[in-house]
Structures are given as C-alpha cells and as structure tokens.
Image 1 (cartoon, rainbow, N blue to C red):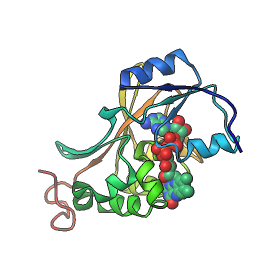
Image 2: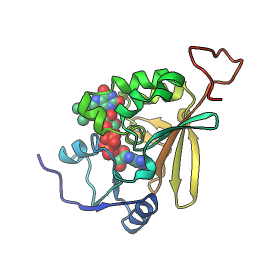
Image 3: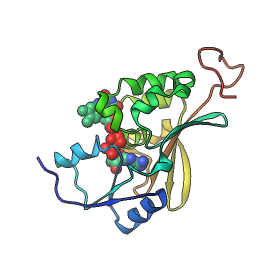
Length: 188
Ligand SMILES: Cc1cc2nc3c(=O)[nH]c(=O)nc-3n(C[C@H](O)[C@H](O)[C@H](O)COP(=O)(O)OP(=O)(O)OC[C@H]3O[C@@H](n4cnc5c(N)ncnc54)[C@H](O)[C@@H]3O)c2cc1C
C-alpha cells in the first residue's frame, strides 16, 4: 500500500527545521521513519508536507553534561543501547533500547521519535519516567524541559506542541550519597 502524496523537505539544521514547520503548518517531522512511514503507508495518517530532520547533526549523540546524561533526539536506539555512559549510569534505559524492535529498528529508530510517537507499547517511555528524565523541546518561543512523567499525556499523545521539536532527552545522574555506588555511579 502506498501513502497519499506529500511534499518532502529536508532540513540541514534545527533552525531550518523550524522555518520549514512555520512555512508548512501541519507538516510532520520525519526522523528514523520507523513509526511515521508505516502510519502513512497504512493511511492511518496523512501529511501535506514532511520535514526530514534525520540529517540534523546537532540533534545526535550522547554526552555527559554537568550532572546529566544528554541524548540528542536523533540518537538511535542502537547508539543508546551501546553507549558506555548510558550503560554505566542509566542501565534501565540501555536495557530497554537494546530490546527495542529488531536490529533494523534499533539502527534507524530514534529516541526522540520514540517519545514523540508515544506508543503505549513502546519500551523507552517507562524507563525514562523511572529515571526521572526530562524531554527538551524547542519551538518558536524557545526551548523548554518537560518531565517525562508529564510529557506522556495518553495513548499516542504528548505535551508537545504542534510546532515544537524534541531536541534531546536528559537523564539526571545519581547524586553522591543517595544509594549510589558501583550500581549507578554519579556523573561527577
Ligand atoms: C517492525 C517494528 C518493530 C518495532 N518494535 C518496537 C519495540 O519493540 N519497542 C519500541 O519501543 N518501539 C518499536 N518500534 C518503534 C520504533 O522504536 C520507532 O523507530 C520509534 O518509535 C520512532 O522513532 P523514529 O525515529 O523512527 O520516528 P519517526 O517514525 O520518524 O517519527 C515518529 C513520530 O514522531 C515524530 N517525531 C520524530 N522525531 C521527532 C522530534 N525530534 N520532535 C518531534 N516529533 C518527532 C514524527 O513526526 C512522527 O509523528 C518498532 C517499529 C517497527 C517498524
């Protein structure tokens, strides 16, 4: 089955992605495409325009920033699963990412797309809620952080505005003296 027709735009930067969303109200973002493309092909959703953010380099990668683990929205499930920082400091998330789908899904699907899609059967949201993660989203009004527990508002629904882009997921590191140690060492 083929999707209904849509105009395709590729953003090179986050700023360009925002410009394209503004120029094409109602456009859908495309990251790894492992949830959006099936929905389009099954005609469970339609889009007049699709904005591909898959090559926006600034949205990719895992790093330790202060007392948080910072994962760009385009970081794939496979990259999360094998990240030494995530394995060491947020093991539940590495474990969840490592059993998400199959190798093809893990190599294309992104953490940002996973949380934005908010499938109740998804593996990552419960780990993110348990780890007290925050979802960073940028929009015309700037960037904001939403607690994972407040981000998921229902079945396939989130606190994300239609003109907002998930830029990163941040997981707080364990604090010294709060049951940490070898099992979940602090970041600093
Ligand atoms: C065969 C198969 C098996 C799977 N099995 C599992 C599984 O076992 N467990 C599991 O958790 N998931 C599973 N998935 C889903 C998979 O994890 C998806 O890749 C993921 O849910 C969506 O990520 P994506 O990058 O592909 O997003 P896309 O498909 O590109 O986008 C999904 C939705 O999120 C929006 N979006 C994407 N990126 C952003 C962003 N940065 N900001 C705002 N909105 C954004 C899109 O507009 C779209 O509405 C499976 C998928 C397939 C096809």
